[in-house]
Amino acid sequence: MAESKGKSSAKTDGARGPSGRTLGGAGRPPEGRQVVGLVTALVTPLTAEGGLDEPGLDRLIERQVAGGADALFILGSVGEGPLVSDSVYEQTARRAAATVARRSRLLGGASDNSVERCLRRLEILAGAGVHYGVLTLPFYGWPGQRDHTIRFFSEIAAKSPLPVVAYNLPKAVGWQIPAEILEELFPIPNVIGIKDTHGDLAQMARVASSPARPAHFSYLPGNTALGARLLALGADGIVCTPANVFPEPFSALIRFHQTGRADIVRRMDQELVPKLTKLLDLLPTGAASIKGLLEADGVCGRHTVRPWPELASSDLPKCRLMLAEMRAAIAEFNASSRAATA
Image (cartoon, rainbow, N blue to C red; front, side, top):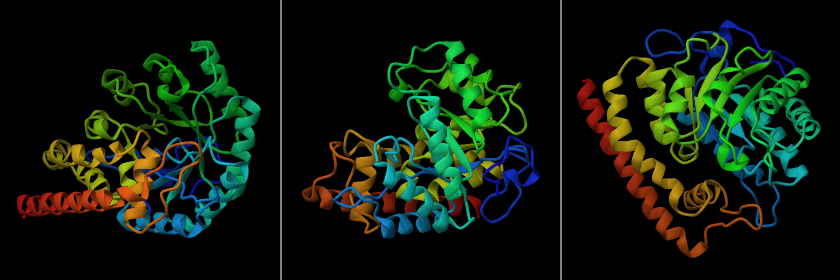
């Protein structure tokens, strides 16, 4: 695992999954890539009073490890990282690191509105045992200029106790970092990757396939609907929210990609992924939708940070029906895939 004080490097163990396997070969990232494969963007289970639901977080993490996730991303946007209290933020980081217990890479959101506040969050993550810090640009009135963007990530990376993943999230920041500026992040010391979350396939494809991207630098799309196409273009993994509920099919998609089964990946992208991404559409936010489904499945509660929407208890039967339909769709696809590979 990466040391909490580690800087950007090309360690050969940086591209190992939780089982210790070395990634490489057809469809696989170069060995120097530190974050690869299925990265589940975890929700943060909360109690009705707004505290951390520790047993719920434990169950959620165990589900991910058992389901084949290569890495977990806590306290990001779907993890309500910028919204939870300071005490819940730190408690979540410590509990997640203890529960993961080095079985998976652990990324933590550290986004805030100044360099100093971001660095404070990075110190908390490092002290808790998280491996990487993930940061958007400041999200309160960001001017949307190249020089400010490069300066922000350069200063954060130079002072961070953790390797840094830059997070392009125009929905939160109000400005999409253009591909040509993202490419300027490649040589910044201690920036080891980009999480890119929007719907502009052409811009994402440019970064994923860039010949200038260093061997150590991970490209991770956060738009699940575009994930398979971007893997084919050179992305190193997918940061996936629906995997909170169903990690197994997304883990399988990654494995089929890594073993060169582009035919099965295409089928999954056309037949299964669109159904799974609809899990995000129950409510206006992905966190509320996923938490409602997880409560219906007995994993954790549906509570969100107030005043953000949360699922009504009267909607839980609808969630259970949706879960049953998704399980049936997954089982049907798995059966047809087994027949195709027999």
